[in-house]
Image: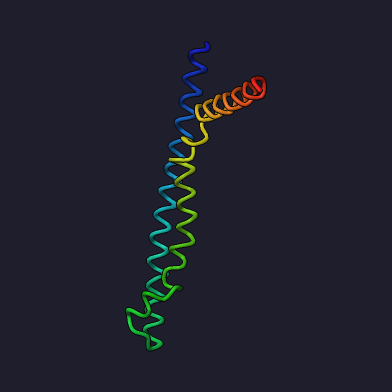
Length: 113
């Protein structure tokens, strides 16, 4: 009975992980598609106002959405693929052990004085 429960739990965890990864790739696809569209509108609009292509493409407005939304994409990526490695249970245990060792060294120094 417990084995079946553990298999079900692993299945649900894997299903959630796949959903998270799928959500990230959907977010990334929307990011690229929407930003290409917005950049094209901005650049062509500026060119119609008499600016050169180089001047239009280097204008902050042409790439600001890429930049700010990109920060959000980075944090989404970090949450799905990278952040778990930093704050995982193993990391927590290592950090606790490290802090306990520092405290122990400090206490020993205080006792030896």
